[in-house]
Structure formats: structure tokens, C-alpha cells
Length: 79
Image (cartoon, rainbow, N blue to C red; front, side, top):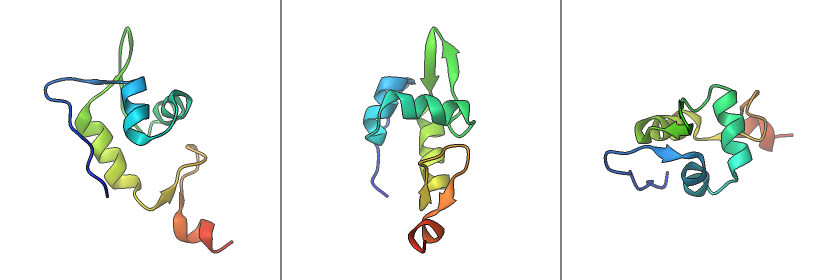
């Protein structure tokens, strides 16, 4: 897994999280609302670097196209 640059002493915004995950903000909101990435609501949503790292470690090898139903890549690729 590629290491992400940890923001020292801070929180990631949804836009920063999207950039780190190389996706769009809508996907990050989907992941937050599905309970897959814990977030704080301080004005806008904020994500702790440790929470993002834990999400990446836990879901490595999963197809996250549908955040409500993450699937192991093996089952997706075998179809």
C-alpha cells in the first residue's frame, strides 16, 4: 500500500481526503455516511489522519464502488 503523507497535528478536510484517495468529494461523503471513514463535524466534516490510515488498511483489497456493500476484489474479479 502506498503511504499517505500524514498532516502533522491537524485534520483533513473532505477535499484533502479526496485528493489523498485520488477520488472526488462525493465519494468521500459516501464513505463517511456509510460509516466507513469516521469524521468530525466542525463546520464541515474533518477526518483524523489515523482514521484515514485505518480505513485504508482495513479496506485494502476491496472494491469500494458501493460503500454500502464493500466486496473483496477476488469476488469482483472472478465474475
